[in-house]
Image 1 (cartoon, one colour):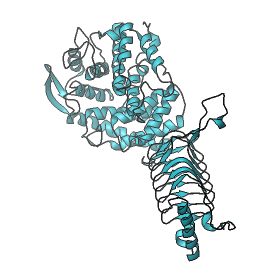
Image 2 (cartoon, rainbow, N blue to C red; image 1 turned 90 degrees about the vertical axis):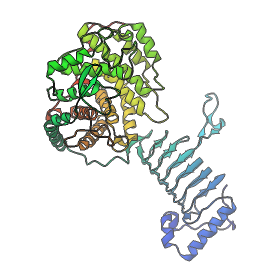
Image 3 (tube, rainbow, N blue to C red; image 1 turned 45 degrees about the vertical axis):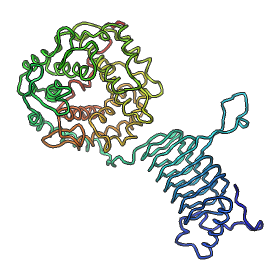
Image 4 (cartoon, one colour; image 1 turned 135 degrees about the vertical axis):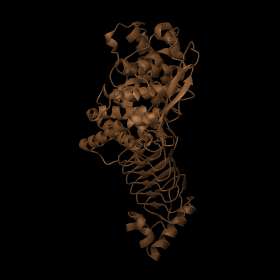
Length: 555
């Protein structure tokens, strides 16, 4: 719908406002305001919704079939509108940008010079016909509120851009962009989250000094922190010595095990028992027939906290220099056929975190069997199945929930912790895993504010650390991510109390053990582990516990 002037002989005169329309409100003369009102009236006659205020350059191209401006829009010379375009209030369109196809803009959207918002695409599926005769298809483009599109950027058809997004100059955006993200590149990828606190880049020396001070504080306080959680309680005929509100009911074996693993970081055993006393208690928790560590009756197929008991109690025994007394007699851990059926039945799509937790428990059971009881289970089946079923595009074993990668990434951490990390096996697609994990972390601001939990932080740091043992892909970006996580976590320490699992909870043993593990892993990645007075032990140990090549495999 091109706009026709009433006088065919008249050509719009260029003014400074055609290049600097933001000056119109304060600098336009009465005559210039009258001319703008007359031009808007022409647009309205042609079916345009012109809105009040702002400035619409007569030297732009208003060719859209439907064009609806909100109030206070400003349009420079050379801008092209074509298709079905709707804008919110206070939008700006700089020189020679293009908004074409089906496009909806929110309020306060800024489109820089030369940028293109393209809400349609050419059909090209038929390779036997020229693209020019295959027509077009339209999904449309939507931009939220407070979006800034940099110069010469291109936003392709089908893309939805969230609120408060910044799109870098020259970017080619082919996928949806979550709110608050800064994206750039071709194709565009997330650079950072605007909500993430701006952390002054620390030199290695600065960070080492902060890490050393933190370690000294923890070294002085850990005994008192454990004492805060000393509560004598009975469970299945055994006296338990530690309490954690997160786990007393659902996982009553865990508080004692967390206390043992924290103490083991300092090469100690926690009060009130000596090492032999702790070993006797934990070994008594194992069922001689099934090998399961129980706080309830053993089951044919352990799940949930029953699986975690294998990991928690087993690794606590290792921290004490001992091991499980009995092998874990669970069919998938010993029989290739049973394992393959079990892996195939796992709810990978419906419950990504639970799926990863199940493999974590299985791999850990196989580890204890192989190391301490000489049972080399069907490892070839385990890693063969996992390698075949990993997604080569994302490096994950589960798809996202919509655009949310939280559960698949958390499941990746659980799965790889009890398998690839424990046995030193190479990941199938480490570079793609890094891409997914970094994008996930950045989409959530590194969990520095929203979603700040020991699970969410650890489930990013541990996978990045693990992938980096195999490749130096995006190493500089990973270093920045881990430095920022380390800084945020150390700031979360509460003197004399330790760490809480999340900010809204009181400090506890689970939060303390997990966040100390984050610090240890981050320090190791950065080459700063030597400044800490404690080391990684137990379930979050950093060493390869049993290299797969050190024993024969079956299955």
